[in-house]
Length: 134
Length: 134
Length: 134
Length: 134
Picture 1 (cartoon, each protein chain N blue to C red):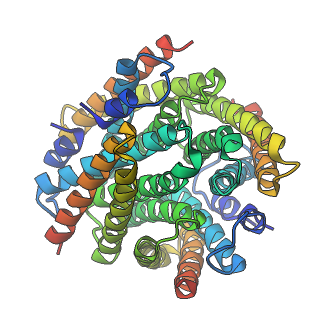
Picture 2 (tube, each protein chain N blue to C red):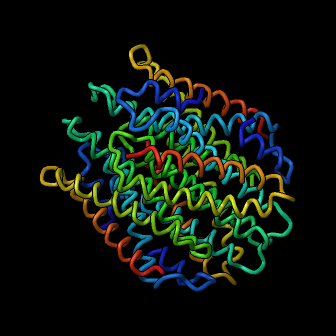
Picture 3 (tube, rainbow over the protein chains, first blue to last red):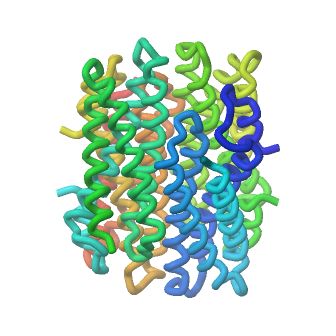
């Protein structure tokens, strides 16, 4: 069981959303941020750098937005839909476009294939959480 | 002149928005993130901690969202309104509520008065940039 | 298999250290950062806040240092012992003291018990990586 | 007066170090992190990308370490030399090497000239703070 899930299960308050959905989202956000940081490093190691520039920029944006979303979603007690909803929307949008760009490289770059999977999973998790929030 | 402005003036591409508006927003985001980190530390030093808990949580959220927004706004070449617009909206919402909470403490806590100013300035800067974006 | 490990296995260069050790460290750093963010939120929900202030501050420091260390360790191509070594030392020191403080609360606060485990595992992983680096 | 300085002047506790030195360091860390994020974006806009790869990686490392150091230095109440000292050493090392790499590009790239200045100023500020700490 992930630390995110264990910490939700020991949280002294009631959670805003189903603990399973919330923990899955937090784990997907952490994983996606890490995958994007590692994919940036791998992209910078490729021969044809001009081909990778868009992917690098999207990965940097995706890592930043996932990290912030993870923090805000974790701090449930001051939940505010006016913050969390647009933040999840921004996160879904960047995970989608970063995943799409990684998909373009995936056939010939295994690291982008892995990063694409992390982005897709995070996009789905954020969509599910957004649907579950009031 | 701030480093943000100097770097925009030496950027090898054309900026998406007026360099003055963009640099003012980036500086306001950096300042607000730092003010929120420092206000959290000051809040934790107060006697009546129960009174400060909401302020601490909002400051932590505000610092995270401002840092991510700063990164995304700085990386102009892959500008995507579907990411930047909701991110700025989330940032405006958290700067507003963090500023409001700091304002409640401002009459008797000078550190919250300073943090309120940083939040208000950041909220205004993000609104202006949001209005200037396509 | 974690995304960190998958991305190391698809990295276009040779890694600086054994991929298993490196991936375990990156995963432990991600987990510890997340556990500390979640434990801060749980600490702020406790009745006796004065008792939790030290834990909150150490968790905030630990989350920041783990996040930075994760990034630097991931970007292997510009490995520089003068940066990575003291950074790992700082990370080991904060994981130790954050783990110790969580251990004090662990008997009566389950969330601190979980966070202590994440800190201990991260401390061990960083020590192992530090020993494996040139 | 910067927000960092205003918040130090309104901090409810006594500071660990001279408020002027501390505020200058916090401001230099914020500025350097922002300069490195912006320089990464500018580097990615250059024609000869292979020439910029090292600079990008060092800037990413420098931004991460400066952000973490800023947080830890701001949270003074749980000051621990075993954390802050090696963290400042790591920060000085990465500011030095990032500044050196930017200096190589500075004659023909104005954005690297600006980033070099931010790195040099941050390196100096961290050295001064390290010297002032017990």
